[in-house]
Length: 243
Image 1 (cartoon, rainbow, N blue to C red):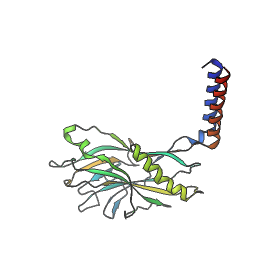
Image 2: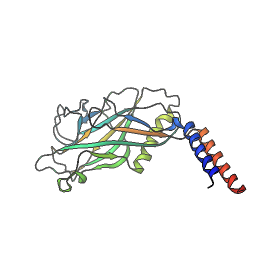
Image 3: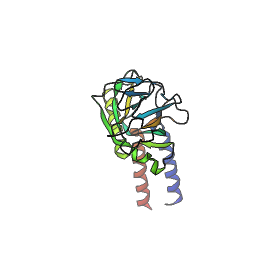
Image 4: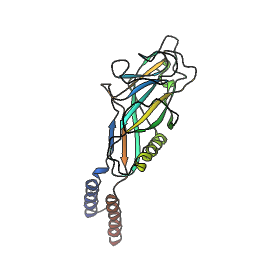
């Protein structure tokens, strides 16, 4: 590529960035309405009093009884100008709480979409769950035999990203004039079998000081940006042919 062509491409790239600035990824931190849930009993405070949610089995603060303890992340949906291109959800495992005989070997956590609301009141019925990613968190990675390190970042993989983008787009597609004020709920569903009581992983929440769950949404570039990119390609080809 000659000097003039290089300058042209550089200028084109700058123009594309200038016209598509509104399409940069939108990053949303989880809301203070995040909560732990067992059955229909919820605890919206970070139950270990330092911003960590518990995930697994055993007694957790006010949520006495037996059965799985799940974590639900709540995000306020941003106003988007264009359709969603991709999405990603990140959270961190920040510790563990297990008894002497406990084992994470059978602990398995799925990520599920639990719905959209115009308020952040906890959702406690999960009959309409949408699976976003199976086994987003595998207990085998946190057994003492593998010497796990904390914090450990966990995020949706390629297939999870696609399912997440599709799930979010169902809301925006149904609400083309959305102007803000609605929330989406994602549940970390601990559904492993034969997990001992008091076997729990600790995950971050909106109240954890060191990290916060985040939802990242990227939209499709504006038509003007795509047109400019197409024009640039056409001009580059024309210059090459003349050369």
